Figure 1 (cartoon, protein in one colour):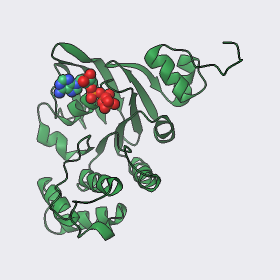
Figure 2 (cartoon, rainbow, N blue to C red):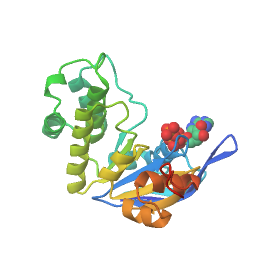
Figure 3 (tube, rainbow, N blue to C red):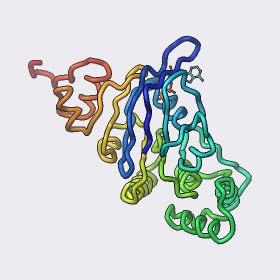
Length: 249
Ligand SMILES: Nc1ncnc2c1ncn2[C@@H]1O[C@H](COP(=O)(O)OP(=O)(O)OP(=O)(O)O)[C@@H](O)[C@H]1O
């Protein structure tokens, strides 16, 4: 489980996360849904230990990434907003380095590489250099890097950005398989259908705060709206749904 307790963060005196608290349980997919600049990436970077909160605490499987970044990283897979792929390496070389950095060696290393290659359908890319890969191919490699050490927790920052339908389907299939295996998954997005379809719980973020949480049905109840999009607009911006022309509000 990932636990976020009362985290605060400012940049140049401007608060971007304000007393944020939530849990991401094992075997569940949680979505951070928010407009541009709501604070999703900053929040996920703090959970990964890439950014320090000014106050509050994060626990990843009981480990605080601010105190024990290596311990937390062993339990975390991260698909970030910046890909960090090494263009000159083949997929096999690249994933081997990351698996070794996670402490895998010998037969365990080979088994992990074979498994991730098969699960993410990477066979045809395995011996190719990353330079020149499409967006979908790059996402597969990023996801493979995040999963090669079989982490208990997975964090994805806008994972479907720029992907075509087949790549989105593979990602969705992978996340559902991991959820069934008990992985705690949190992803950020502003794509409503994707969030509605994939997540067990949605955290609506606005200006660094959580302004709604629950399933799409629970958010609809909280906001008095019918659709997730209308619920989001009502909760994040305090606006009523747009009425079709000719229909009184
Ligand atoms: N390193 C930084 N220095 C200064 N300001 C920053 C920095 N990182 C983020 N911010 C600011 O913090 C706020 C939240 O940014 P963040 O990237 O967390 O939002 P987001 O919800 O992920 O947005 P998007 O959907 O556009 O990716 C924004 O106003 C952004 O400009």
